[in-house]
Length: 465
Ligand SMILES: Cc1cc2nc3c(=O)[nH]c(=O)nc-3n(C[C@H](O)[C@H](O)[C@H](O)COP(=O)(O)OP(=O)(O)OC[C@H]3O[C@@H](n4cnc5c(N)ncnc54)[C@H](O)[C@@H]3O)c2cc1C
Image (cartoon, protein in one colour):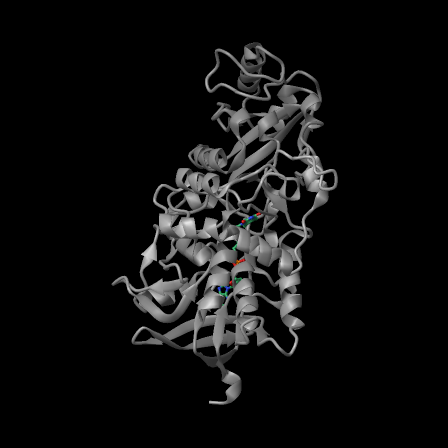
């Protein structure tokens, strides 16, 4: 064994959680090896697609509306009834420390975003928002962190990054990590030894073979917003080694509704269908399926995405007119399907024109206050009820999207992975999506908890090695 193959800590993964763990370990003078399946050009895992953080904070911090630790915890409890409350509390209590970590390692926030939401970064007017959008999005975040690791000064530890490096086997003896077997560039097999292992390799969201087995034909309806790397190999390796798990294999983060014309994978953020609150949504049988005005935020988005999954062929259409077009903002990437008549539009999207005319008529007649709500139709539209009368008319085909899996490794507050018996592996840690099921259980979602969870447990793992 040469010295080059032995490290203080080996970290699996190259997204937010892995990078935070690597930086924390290096700042404690450790010799780190970071193994990521991502090629250099696409480094950053699913984190590349992210946009926002939500931290607990005081009113006015960065011009935001206040969001206390107790509010955060109460929102986690609402979204995730089976959450391990001790760990949820741990994440929230460390939220300010996480914000400090993110900012001191170069991440900045989009001022435009705050302005758009009615706040002002400079004038210190309070926005209605509690979230912060990263300058450059998730790609900006990971590049800052990689840059930091590439430029560590001599007083700090060292971090060697191997791209295109897939962990295929984890060797454990008597609850102690020994080594990982890795395939580099799909051909070269190597074994690396270390005193500690931190796993931040995501869930199994890109393992379409397994997901198809779990969800059957319904899986064909779903569109995945992330990339193809996270097949869950390290997660299943640890289960073979006796690790305890959290959540169910079926705990898929089905959210949000996306533009159905997106490819099956790699839709990213722009796949999100942002026109729904200004539309009516009909399925292939031209039936409305939910209250479109209420489609906003993590909780309702998850519920509605699941409803869409149950529709014929898992598809629906958002329909609106030219007066609503201007209200949508600029954040949906695809052009809409357009026609000067409702009949023409219905033909273009292959649904019954007479039925569509009737649904639109009933909807228009039920609006009591323009831009308000409807009365006497089911489902109602509780907000943004604008009549569909002004040509051209528009349609956007909709599909249920999904973002990540939650079945993962059970951990304790030190970020150590637990065995089936409940005691921890001595030197094996997990952070990020691979353990998010400890905090986010069942099927609801809390916006932006993913990055915070990865940052807190990434720091914790790096501190505890
Ligand atoms: C489109 C989209 C938008 C999102 N937006 C947000 C947002 O705004 N805010 C938020 O908080 N969350 C968001 N999320 C959720 C987000 O994915 C997580 O919060 C976060 O990025 C997860 O980070 P991670 O480090 O755990 O995993 P990832 O970033 O997915 O990193 C996993 C890493 O593991 C590597 N890997 C996988 N298998 C192996 C292996 N066998 N060997 C070696 N390496 C391996 C991968 O190559 C990758 O580098 C979004 C998700 C998607 C899909």
